[in-house]
Structure formats: C-alpha cells, structure tokens
Length: 114
Image (cartoon, rainbow, N blue to C red; front, side, top):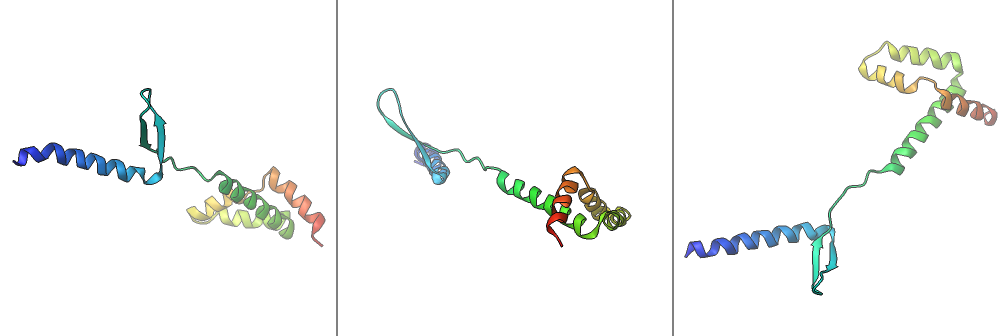
C-alpha cells in the first residue's frame, strides 16, 4: 500500500516545487495543438547600473569639490597622508588620487565658488 503512494508523492512534490517557482510570475505559451501552458518565469536579478553610475559621478564630484576647496597642495598632502596608513587608508588614497576628471570638475567648481 505504501508503494502506491510513492509516484503520487513524487508528483505532488514536483507540482509544489513548480508552484513555488511561479512566485516570480508565469509565461504562458500556446503549443501547436492549442493547449495553453503556464511555465514559471525565470528570475534574473538585474544589476543596478543607474545606481552604480550615480555613485561614480557623485564620487568624482566630491573629489573635484575637495580639490577646489582645499587647493592642489593641501589635497596632495592629505592624499599622501592616507598612503602611509592602514590598508583601508591606502585604498582610500588610491581612490582619492587626482585624475583628469577630478581636475576638470575642480576647475569648474572654482569658477562657481567665491
């Protein structure tokens, strides 16, 4: 008697697993014989590209503002001070080193700042 329930239990587990996968939605297709079949939509997490781009632009603006506010010599001294610190400070020095975009932004900010 217990053997008779094994195929039923397997089928029930498969149906429950498929139903749980359908929490992300379904894609309905019509087969050649006219039967409408619902299949679970595949979940593919999207990378937040706009958020990453906004973070990078904000970082460059911040670096440009600091360079304009402190001046080139003071900014270079502070970045050099970071290079002598711990691993995290060295990583910060690498990120904060002046580059072409930072210099251009600093020139534009100097025009605006009093």
